[in-house]
Image 1 (tube, rainbow, N blue to C red):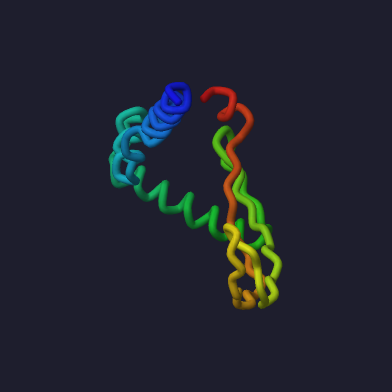
Image 2 (cartoon, rainbow, N blue to C red):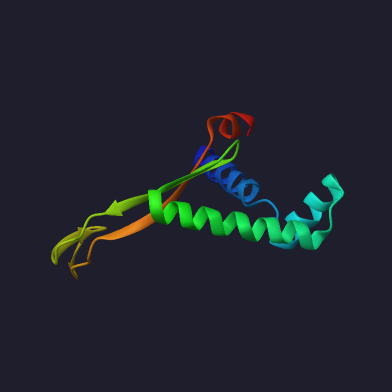
Length: 116
């Protein structure tokens, strides 16, 4: 029993470490870029806005956008689901039919995965 409790504690510590601090905001990112490159914060914000617009347009048209050294954004088609009965957690549940939809996914670059 003591071993089981230790494993649970270890898992909880890992989860807390994963949560970490807050994610950097758009303003914080613009501030960091401005400081590093000697630009105004408003200029950096404009660059971030245009980057987001370009990425959105590219993902819509070709279904794929790569931010070099960071991540790849792709679209994926989720199949439609049929209505009926499904077993979830040991209980039979009635499920509604859902139409097919396109979802957007982001994948980190291999170099980023290795560095973390």
